[in-house]
Length: 246
Image (cartoon, rainbow, N blue to C red; front, side, top):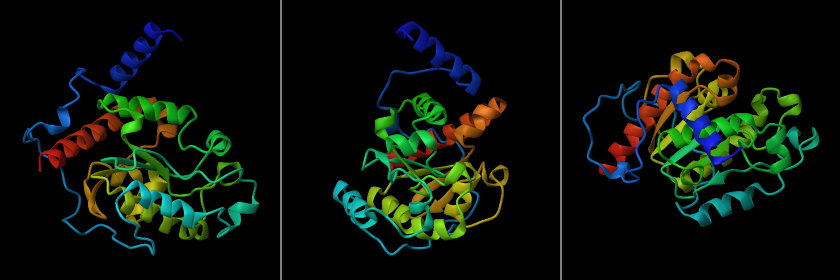
């Protein structure tokens, strides 16, 4: 695909998302708050704050420490159910924005990087729609190993991996976390509510603001929901602006 085709593809996505305009201004995060209202789903401190056992410092060394503690993990049965490698996370270790998905798929299991398949390509475009690059954010999953046939992670697998996700969050200290899909939102917020009920709210979570939205893989099956995701990402963008001017 040449540059013109790539640009046309990006513009087509923006049109689907309902993006009204595009700016080249890279300083938008430092602008003063515009005063837009953001619905708050819970009062401050009301969301899940369960602490994991790992609490590294907020630095690249903190993430290195978490990865070293994780090791060649054999804490749950996934290590003997066909995984190729651990998919830890990727991106800026001091990111203001962090995305959390469910678990690695086949492409991720091969490459060792989260969100590199078709859903990952869509996620990259969504990130670019709020004038950020993939390298500006941090991307991880609740589960670090691919479940067989991409099935949903099971409770014991979540229990084994969750402390390492908490430690990643504590090491990065993002200002905003986006939970991608029902599973990630439920795992982080410790609820059984569907993503349709969790969307549209801003949660206080481990020192950050958390937004839940649809998973990019779901958008590939239901493209009509892309506008909903764009509405959620506009809230993310506004939160980053507010936190940047605080």
